[in-house]
Image 1 (cartoon, rainbow, N blue to C red):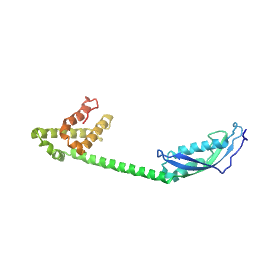
Image 2: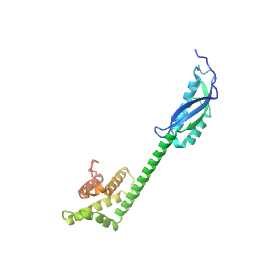
Image 3: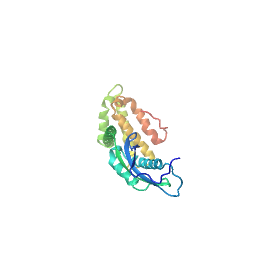
Length: 241
């Protein structure tokens, strides 16, 4: 039967891996600790194992909030907690200190992720800015119709009656411009309008896509159905461009 110990050496160490806020990326943790038994709280045969479990659990919870590139900040946060007595198990009190490090290949992966996320953020910001400019053009009462007709000039003079096709182009413009005015976020902010604004943004992006632009003639009537049905309450939400 193992001999009972009432305290652990203050210089005891162990090494473990702690997952960071970056999924799948880990801190390397070297934890130095000590513990002492609390009298009259029940038998304690393996104090070191209990102490390590408590330290690892606490450090894991803290490190999970920090990306690996914030190694120093994570280390300071963990040490602020480990420096206080840990009493998760009433049979003993544990204190410790951690030194966190991150492997070079892990740092490289984390940096690539940051760069990719930043590129994605910039691309989305540029797309948002482009769509806002497009919205402003469409809502301009003087230049909007001219810009729209000019954009689809080839469509109007393709096969078929130019007069009828020009009327279709202008009707489509009026429909879109009217919807954009009615879904202005400064006028209404309820769920229905949010859904309509999402449809408007999606359609504007579709109209700007070169592949979609080639099929603009076939899309005009589908656009009418897409934008009128949600407002009139007759659509099941499955309209497709």
